[in-house]
Amino acid sequence: MAAETEKEERAYVYMVRCAGGQLYTGWTNDPASRLHAHKSGKGAKCTRALGAQRFAYLERCTDKSAALRREAAIKKLPRRQKLELIKNGFDDPDGNGAFPLGACPPREKE
Image (cartoon, rainbow, N blue to C red; front, top):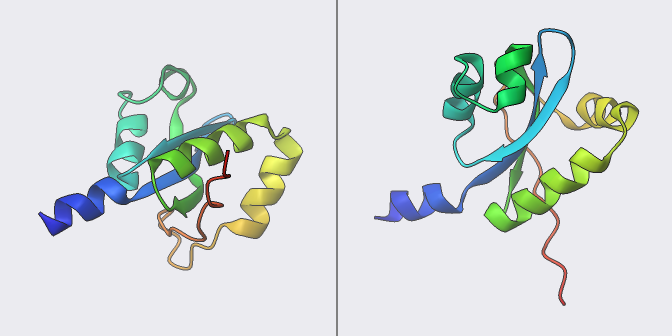
């Protein structure tokens, strides 16, 4: 049960690089499965059409809510800033496109 709870609490925001260089931003609680879904044509409509290749960016968040907020914030960025985020914020020492880093900002109090 503890493993189930831990899996539910994990959340990631990511950018997938497509064959034509386009970036798709989304969130998941299982990065490996989500990338496989994108690559096999079972992910988002956009990545089915554009041909997902690999993660360009992957960031671990505290929970689903934080990942959704971070996804929305990244989607609002212009492409130039997304590329800068990828350049400065993605640490993938093994080159496998699946190294989570950082944490999403805490939820703002209302």
